[in-house]
Image (cartoon, rainbow, N blue to C red; front, side, top):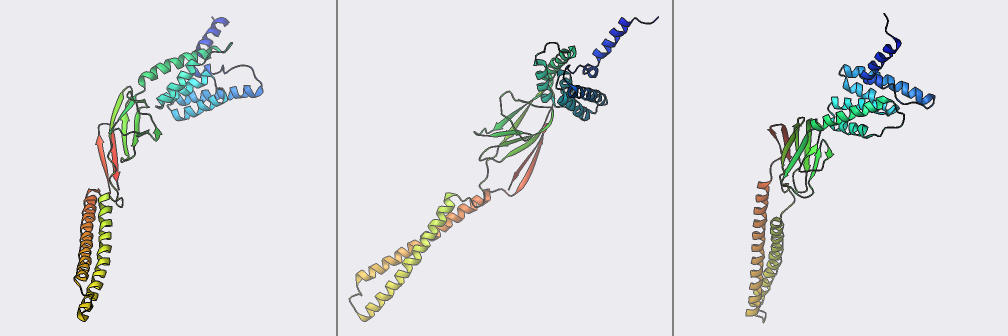
Amino acid sequence: MHPRPRTLMMLASLVVAASPALAAQDLGAGGGEAEEKARTEARELVYTGDELFAQKKYAEALRAYQRAEQLVSVPTTSIEVAKTLAAIGRLSEARDLAATIAASPPTPGEPWPFNQARRRADALRSELDERIPRLKVTIKPSPPGARLKVDGQVVKASLDGASIDPGNHWVEVEADGYVAERQRVYVPEKETTTLDVALTPVPTRPGSATPWIIGGFVASGAGLALGLGTGAAYLSARGDLAEACRQRTASCSEDARSGANTLGWVSNVGFGLAIAGAAVGGIALGLESSREPASNVTWAVGPGYISVRGTL
């Protein structure tokens, strides 16, 4: 006996309903020749994507599905993009797309596979909500204006952590006055991973003198100038006084002697200031240099992370 035509039609309908690729045949109706050509090409791309997905060639399948979605953006093509994004680990992107598909309003007279695609998208969204992990970064100290980046993208730090795809990620923290910190961390699915980042103040660089260094050498220079100037005046006054006394003139007086001695005293004070200022500046410079670390790069390895820190 041969099955009735009605039975054959029911079996064919079940086969179509069971295949996401075949469901994509309903890519909309109406339009002209160009629209029909786009739908036909999109259908073939979905078939190709299904074959590649079954072979676990997810990157190639994604390209086929995305090309189909560019030609005909409907729920039956978008859900294939979302499922493939999830398969390759781009869970956050897949979750957002699935949520968009599930929330898209139905249109009057649309093919039934569109509604099925929305149901698949809603189920995928719920699944990904449970799978997507979170990364919580704690910065110590926590300076105002600290900048947090994950894989080069700026992320806003929060107490609950940020949603992130599972896998390895680079975390960077920058803050004014601190050495930039960069760490690699592995984030598993379904978990909240906490990463503690300790910031180190930027050391004083050579050439950025402290007030003690500047003040010491400025005082030394001023004292030297004073000592040289008054010293020259003292020698000249002593010479004039000796000549006046030799000739027994009125210039050979006690006041003249007192004035010359004063110049000598001031000169000595100037040279003393020069020596003291040089000593203060030199000591301050030596202490600053001893605190300056040598150029180096250090690595730290811990559970689930690798940290690198460099100073120059």
